Image (cartoon, rainbow, N blue to C red; front, top):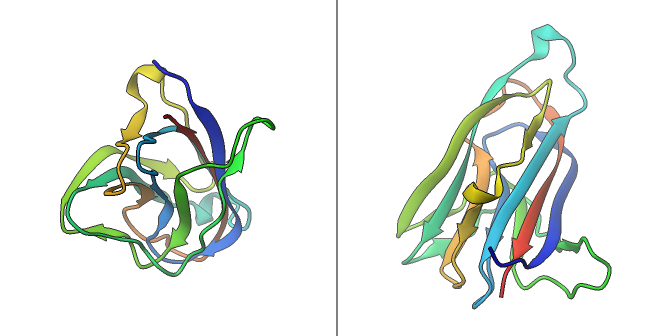
Length: 163
């Protein structure tokens, strides 16, 4: 497996109140991306009575028209290794109007996590989710439903850029 440069995409201390795209990643032409890991936690809802089991998924959009989500922000991916160059891919976080496509949506992973405990997703190298090296593909990590009450969350996506 070829190795590329590693970046982080981060959101911090965000009040999550609706279903949303935690991370929306769009690769640059000729530079596919792989999702290496996801870490999401929360700070304001502690105790058993405040638990949510939240459905989440990783999707890849391809083809036709891709529409970026809105309502969040567009952070700059951060280099992990000091000598690496800036990322070619772009990112968005916490979009409450979800990204969409008129092309194909492929759900690559679906699961749940306990919001009180948090989410740490680190797949083995053989099953890393990749988004093609084109400007007509997006990789989306988001909720499949809304939280039951406002939850202050922070999260990091670790992304490898190839090419």
